[in-house]
Length: 102
Image 1 (cartoon, helix red, strand yellow):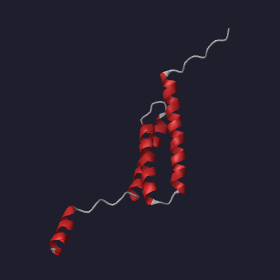
Image 2 (cartoon, rainbow, N blue to C red):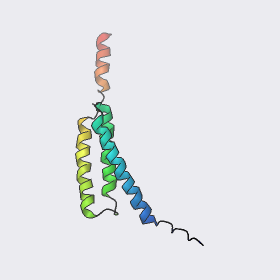
Image 3 (cartoon, rainbow, N blue to C red):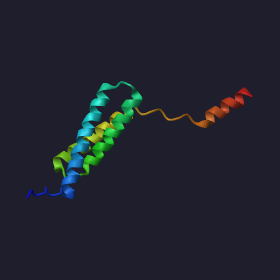
């Protein structure tokens, strides 16, 4: 009678999910390098930074890996900041312009 394989433990499942997140992050990094649109680069870099933040908090990785993920998070946050959209202008300027026209 064949024996059924043991169900993976929660920690094994979590480790597999984190490895999958790491691989997905590498895919996002590849996409970032292949696009030139600033808006897309901003979104990709911000997602990559969040992924590295998540990875840096996971105990299934050793301390050195977690420290590397934390450093990479900072670098990708800085990269995202380069492509961040400009804040919308204040409404006060528009009101002054409309008053000028009337």
